[in-house]
Length: 217
Image (cartoon, rainbow, N blue to C red; front, top):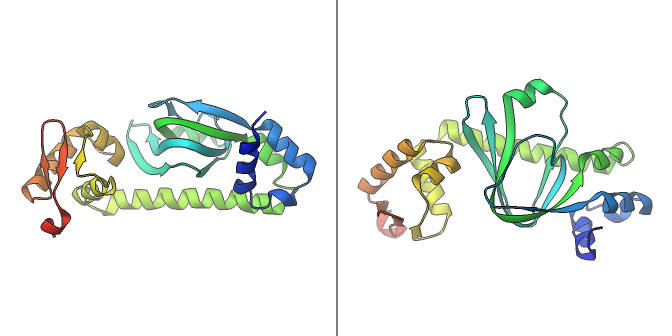
């Protein structure tokens, strides 16, 4: 049984929560569960987390996994954000491409199973619209990320990523940066050296020092 605090989360997740019948709300409450995810755990589209996933705390990084073992970065899920995994029966799609995520920090999620949500899609048109919008938002974020990978030079994406961390000193390995950008360690190392020559940053043995942007620009 989830806590009273978690029930309040459900009220925020579903804007139409109070418009649903009490028995239907009870079914969602009774089926919901809290899961703790350990840092560096990886979850592939294996139906173990199908449904609506509300991140109570932590951080998740989503990526696209393909048969050639490449990881294409998509987006992050941060505190108090929602993700929706729909149970697709198309084995061709799930075999060729899998959306997966890695746990960046120890995380706690509130999971509402897909099987329960699916019960109310026909009963409540607003539920169908809500889940449809979540799926559309996820698709839009994914396409935007893939578009950036295809159209924006890696050097620019690398610099934008480093700036997005909002730190003067960055203690990430080249391998960790490569995973975030869907590249390889060797390519990242080469582009870091280019950025260093262009005076955007300095590379030390264990850290990357971001130079003052005002000086660079």
